[in-house]
Image (cartoon, rainbow, N blue to C red; front, side, top):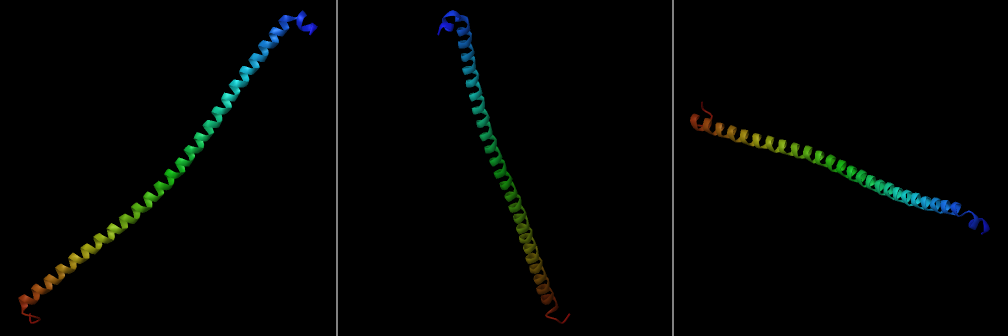
Length: 102
């Protein structure tokens, strides 16, 4: 206690130093909080990216399936039209030739 009364400038320096330490400690706590928040946002972004990749793969797979389905449907339609035309030609030929006597 005697030292404190004889050296007030040292006490003042010590108080300033403690205040600076407290300030630096507060800044570091804020920085740590920001880093943790950033880490959480990065994890959220990674999750969203993985989800988007899954959806893109699913969309591509469904697109291929739809393309095949439409191609088969188009092929069936062409075969049906071709079959109908062939039947009409045979009917016209049978009418023109009075049966199979051509």
